[in-house]
Image (cartoon, rainbow, N blue to C red):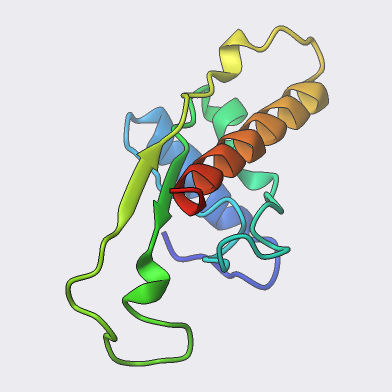
Length: 129
């Protein structure tokens, strides 16, 4: 799905909801891009991920991919190391229909907080190895 990253993009969100409602899988970076691990922007989750989950009534599977920065460092065009370990960890699935608050705003806040917790646990497990 093409995304206009510097501003809100209702077309992309609408298309993602349509795909999700049709049983497709949509992968997104909830920070709005690929941030540096453990940077100040790493845990700033954009609300679009919660919007998609609530609007399409689909669960979120948090996935953490660590180690890619050692293959292609930021600002470099070429691979630095070919045989480098990449770690992929899956967090606990977040089910929007199991959050029992009547307010959509409160559900959104809870989803974002749970996602942030999962990302922190995942990154902590990787960096603490």
